[in-house]
Amino acid sequence: MYIPPAKGIEEYISKWSEDVQERLWMLRELIMSLNYPIEEAVKWRIPFYSCSGMVCFLNNSPKRGIELVFAEGKVLPDPHGLLYDNKTTMLYFGFPDAANFPENELRELLESAVKHNLERKAVAAAAKQAAKAMAKQKPAKTSGA
Image (cartoon, rainbow, N blue to C red):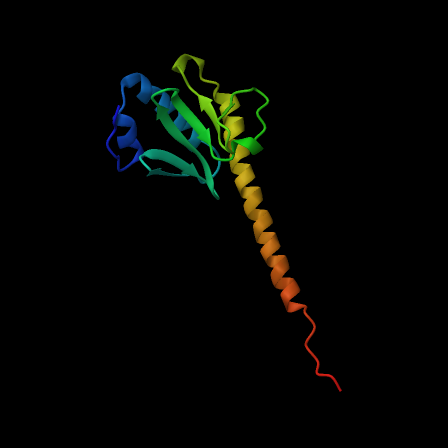
């Protein structure tokens, strides 16, 4: 089913059938309820969510249905076995029906994904600071006598 491009998340969701809309709203509300500054945008015709880097996106696959796709799912702990692999760094959560919504388990995964991004950003900032400090400590060149 072709869905024309949407200008925002609400417009994207409104273009689907009621059962699909219900699941997309549930996922969006969960993502936006995290205690982090989550940014959302429609890119490549689907909703993306980021915080210090891409966290996840929503997809309605004709073959697999509603999916919550974790950008770096391979690094996330998945003690409840919710995610499935597609042979990339991304991992997917399939959402076949609203009655079986594992809200708490998905919240844990989403928080892990955000924390991973924040930790990666902190490590990069620390490495940059260390490189600057080392550059300042280089001994001055002396000319031979």
